[in-house]
Image 1 (cartoon, helix red, strand yellow):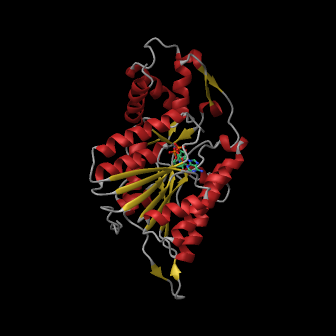
Image 2 (cartoon, rainbow, N blue to C red):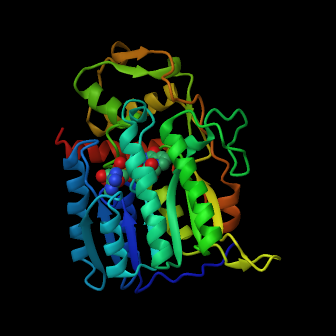
Image 3 (tube, helix red, strand yellow):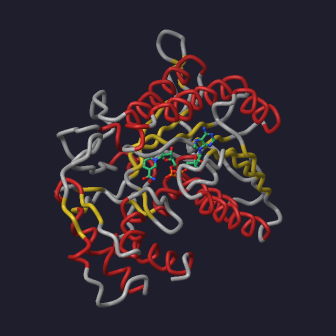
Amino acid sequence: MRAPNIDLKQKTILVTGAAGFIGSNLVKKLLQEVPGVTVVGFDSVNDYYDVSLKEYRLGELEKIASKHPDCKWIFVKGNLADKAAITSLFETYHFSVVVNLAAQAGVRYSIDHPDVYIEANLIGFYNILEACRNYPVEHLVYASSSSVYGSNKKVPYSVEDKVDNPVSLYAATKKSNELLAHAYSKLYNIPSTGLRFFTVYGPAGRPDMAYFGFTNKLRKGETIKIFNFGNCKRDFTYVDDIVEGVYRVMQAAPEKVMGEDGLPLPPYKVYNIGNSSPENLLDFVDTLQKELVRAGVLPKDYDFEAHKQLVPMQPGDVPVTFADTSALEEDFGFRPHTPLAVGLRHFAEWYKEFYKV
Ligand SMILES: NC(=O)c1ccc[n+]([C@@H]2O[C@H](COP(=O)([O-])OP(=O)(O)OC[C@H]3O[C@@H](n4cnc5c(N)ncnc54)[C@H](O)[C@@H]3O)[C@@H](O)[C@H]2O)c1
């Protein structure tokens, strides 16, 4: 186990992507659990998906912040790629810990919209690294992705595996983030930890992801497309597990150690955070259906078979994702554990309430 070396109490923390799915859940946990914390959220609130969801998440954060008067919640709207805005943010707040979750997500979207990936994930991340260099932080934590494993044949995917065969631009930007962070950790002794998340789901999640998109379509009586004829396996990870992992990692920055050459060794780590229990896509859809019926989002007599179409694989997709979480377990005594049915139940219940089904 790695002992925590950062006490978050009273600290000022930057969470980029705070209006996003994972970011908003992280901010919520910080406000609820860290006495006296100041959390600065940064997000462009872009319209990649329904902006009202992002506004809803920000609204929920306002409510939580009002119940924790010892904490401060500050939201700044801006673009990561705007260097002057990032510099001014760091100059104003002098963050102790930075969690970079803002990014253009999604594998398929990167095929037709490469520009936004370069802007947010490369230029944006570079701006964060530069700011961490000029306004030193105790720890930079950033989101990577299971997609860096590309079509890795070996499962489960381990952080020890060689990952230099990305099959989408999205994956290439995430792998580039890890490389850039390594260089900055080495050159400027910036403690950094990259986290490869595996298919995250949960309430108020992302509508571009399968479970959410399927639900929207089934509700409208449309047909859902199940890729690779259902022969896909995904390590679906519940958002609370991801947030717990990020929270633990934030408090343990990689140690600064001198190498034999008298220069610092890079204080640099990468971990997988995934459920380590891949589900077949058809079983996943089956569980989702049951939970949607149970929550009353869909009627008991819904004809699911009439609304399913098995189709070939899409470019950029991979047949399986499966996280080896042994490094996370060894260092933090934690691994995601929420069963799919439990997580999807929370999603279905939230969906019913949010869309007033
Ligand atoms: N959800 C998953 O399954 C998953 C899996 C692997 C990795 N990730 C990574 O985790 C992070 C969070 O993902 P999420 O699911 O919460 O996505 P999300 O899209 O809900 O959140 C990302 C947020 O970043 C903001 N953003 C995008 N470009 C920006 C820019 N240039 N400047 C400022 N803000 C910008 C968006 O407005 C959005 O609110 C991302 O880095 C994503 O790549 C997510």
